[in-house]
Image 1: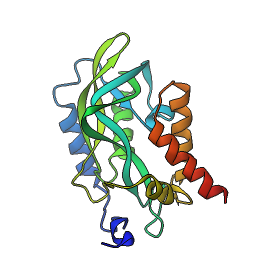
Image 2: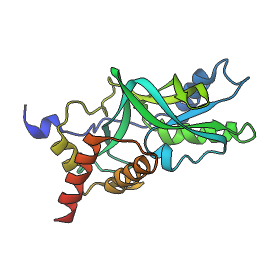
Image 3: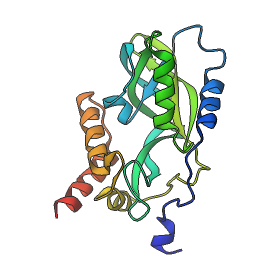
Length: 210
């Protein structure tokens, strides 16, 4: 298989309809609105949550890992130059540190609708309730887990291939490089070590600096 075929973007990816997003949100929230609703962020939601919250904590999810495994051909890339975004991927030996937010009940309905429009544009994620361990106890939080059967899922890329995709990619939401930079900066502020991502980021900086 050629490199172009292996790294080809998902040209057939379509946006979910407003009805499909609403059904996904309703299904996710079924039976859960009586108590607190938490959201776990592991990439852009860490530094741009865009939700009103009453509590914010550092947390960790076991059995998953943060990876650059989502092709983006609109938000931070194009069909001609697809970028890469983050997805939370199942890994029984892995773990992922991030930030968990308890939503303000007064703004919860509108914030969740906006969050679904942002994260569930194409259905690349499976909204899942995962246990997040925090210093103040465990919470159950909505977490956007990557759908490995979706055409946007990017599997088995080398660090060099990740960097090549990210460098120079731009989309409706801006630069893919900036997206990675902001995420790495936030991870640093939180004291979260991600050696593989540091290597990819250094490669992107080298490519875009040439």
